[in-house]
Length: 145
Image (cartoon, one colour):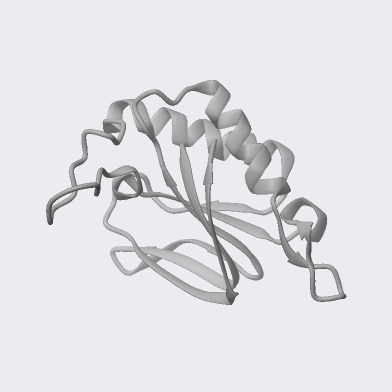
């Protein structure tokens, strides 16, 4: 499981002109699920998303986590994140979990994050989404679970 996280001042996801998820200051996480992922990866990714220290501590150091700041978390499924880009000029998607496997795992990640954090929003799995954000920093990390 992969998550490209970005510290944001604001982020939202629109589907067919309707906003389906939005946050103020916090993290936008684009989530890619791989074929071998399961419950251990879900639990680890939830822990990392909420605990990874990317927010300033008042002295300009990234020492605070989302759990500590109480900011929003916007989870967006993105199968292209798990693509194989190692050769050629077109991505291969055999390294991404198929939708029937990925969707339940993504939903479990959402549930795990919501159980531990009060401000969790999502996009819509499998939909064509327009993601808007204001990256704060910019601060962007690729997490693996």
